[in-house]
Length: 119
Length: 108
Image (tube, rainbow over all chains, first blue to last red; front, side, top):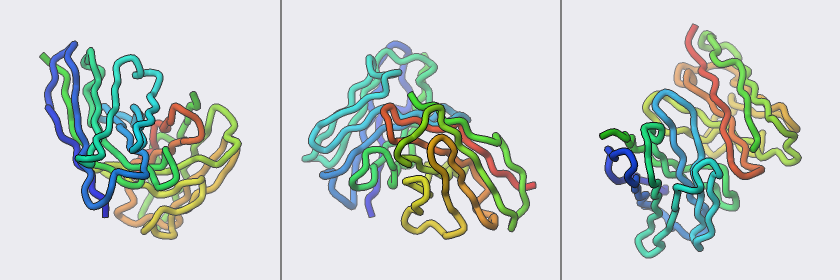
């Protein structure tokens, strides 16, 4: 069974860049769509972006100007960069895999990583 | 973007009772690209239903989804203790993918 694990700094200063990675184990990153989704503490879910293993990307317009998603198939991982962060970017960040053949139904999730934006 | 409105915000029920959760889309969804997730405290969401009515692998049959167009429903036929959680609907028919605000099912 595939497992996803987020990693990166848990504290980022305002105006800096948030960088997270998602390591995929127990399965190949190939032939699937991979997304980042975030959840501010106590609030709802927001989709950030997806990437296909081939490198095709799609971003939420609300964040597109600040977000970059990338994939490294040799390491079986994908990554998120969010620049110019503010306190509003404080959230639990999840990486997720979409069902085979779909881009937007998430059947596997990482445990989530709380990233706090604060000086 | 498609805005999803979930109701009620909170549902207070007893174990064994039937739960009916609603999700309304701001635009007609010509294809039933609607999913439901369960989120327990401190956990990642878990996929329950996709395609409006297809249960995900390993999901008990007390969970069922229905609906089309703009109105969708998640029904839990008899609440088990582990079902008390927050439920989110999500559309994936049009980018950007969006989630509803959630319905909390709490113990009465």
